[in-house]
Image (tube, rainbow, N blue to C red; front, side, top):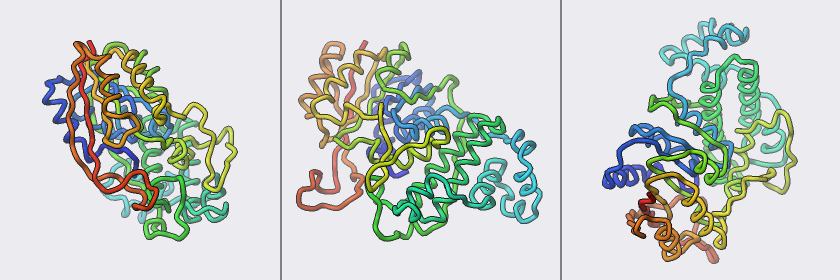
Length: 367
C-alpha cells in the first residue's frame, strides 16, 4: 500500500542497526505499525512482536502479516457456502485456479466470480456519489467483496486469520486502483491508468514466526504500559502535521465495513469522523511530551526511534527528550539518506522541497 512513512525501503538499514547493537530477538513492540512492514520484518528475524496503531486498516495488516501463522484451509467455508461450492466444481473455475491452493481459489472467487453490488463505497466514493476515488465498477466490486467477507466471518464460515488475510488483500487491492496520488486527501479529477484497471486481490500467505504475537488498535502508550517488559520498542511516529485519519479515510472505511452504524460523511472528499484517531505526534507543541510519555510508559530495555530531517521536532529537542529517558543519558544516532515518498510536486509555498531526505534512527538504553 502506498503510505507516508512506509519503512519497506529502509528495512535493511533498520535490521542492520539492530544487529550492530547486538540485540538478540526476543519481544518487540512496534508502536506505530502503519502497514506492518517493520512488524513483518521483525517477525521474520525471530522477534515476538506486539504491534499497535490507532487506525483500523493498520490493525487489519497487523493481524494478517504479524499475527497470522499459516495459510487458511477454508474447509468450513467450502462446506457452508453453496454458491462457492458450485463455483469450485466449475471446470473453468478449476482451470483458472489450478495450482493456486485454497487461498488462491478463494481469492479468485471473490475477485472474478461474484457480481459487484452497490454499497457504501460505490454510493459515496465513485461517480454515483460525485467522487472519483474508484471507477463505479471497481467500487461496486469492493462493496461486494467486503460484504461477503463480513458475512463469512460473522457466520463462522471463516476464522479470524482467514478474514484478516483476505481483508488485507482487499484494502491493498483497492489502493492499487485508487484514483489518487497516493493519499486520499483528494482524488484526481481525471481517470489515471491504474484506476481504469480491474480490481485484483493478491493475498500474502502468512509466514510462521514466534508464537504470542499480538495486534492492537490502540494508543501506543496504552499498549506499552500493558505489554510489560520487552526487549525493544520501535517508535516510528508521524513526523509532520498530516493526520493519518484524514489522509487514509477511504482505506479506513473499507477496513471497518460500517455494517452496523453508517457514518456521516463530510466535505468534498467524504471524510469520516475520526474521534480517538487524532495524534498528538502531529503537533509541534505536543510531540515532545508524547514521546516523553511513551518512553516513561514502556517496559522496554531498548528503544529505537525513527524520525527524519524534516520532522516537527528539532533534532535538539528530540535528543533532549531521549537523553532524559536514557540510562546514563547516552543517545546514539544512525542516519541514512533515501528518496522521499512524493504525492505531489514542488511548488511555491510547499514546505518540503526536493526528492531526498534523511532518516534518523536513534537508540537509547532505557533500563
